[in-house]
Length: 206
Image (cartoon, rainbow, N blue to C red; front, side, top):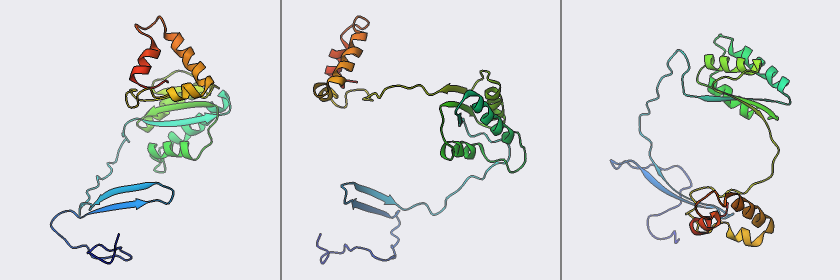
C-alpha cells in the first residue's frame, strides 16, 4: 500500500474518532509471519452496559460439573469426603459452585479413578458427594475409571463436507485399510447396503 497518497494512515498513537451518529466500526487485517491471518470487524460497544445484580439466596445457574479423581477407589472416596466437608460449611466463605468446578479441573491433577457430580446448588452437590463417599448410585453422579485403549481416527460430521474423505489414508496406510475393512465387515449383513458403498458415495472412511 502506498501510504503517501490518500487519507489512510497507520496509527502509532491514540487519536480522536469523531462521532457520526452511527456506531463506530473498524476493519482489522492482521497478517502473521507464520501464515496465520486474522480479518475482523470491530464495532463500538454500547455506551451503557447494564449488568444484572447478583440476587442473594440459593445459587441456581443450571447444572455444573464437579470432577474428583484419585489413584484408587478408596482415595476417591476420601477426596469426595474432603470436598463434602467444605460444602457443608455454611459460612460466608463458601465459594460459588462455578468457582469450585473451575478449580477442580484446572488446579488439581487428574488420576485414573474419577467421579463427576452434576448439580446446580450446594444442596445438590452435598447429596451427590455423599453418594460418592458411600459408594452408592445417585442421580447426577457418574463414576468410573480410565480404560486403556488404542488411538482411533474419527472423521466427524455428516460426511458430505468432503467426498470420499479418508480414502487417501486407506490407500496409503495398510494398517488404516485393515481396520476400515474390519469395521465394514462387522456391518455387512446388518445393513441394507454395503457400508463401504455408502461411505464411498457420501463421505469419509471413518
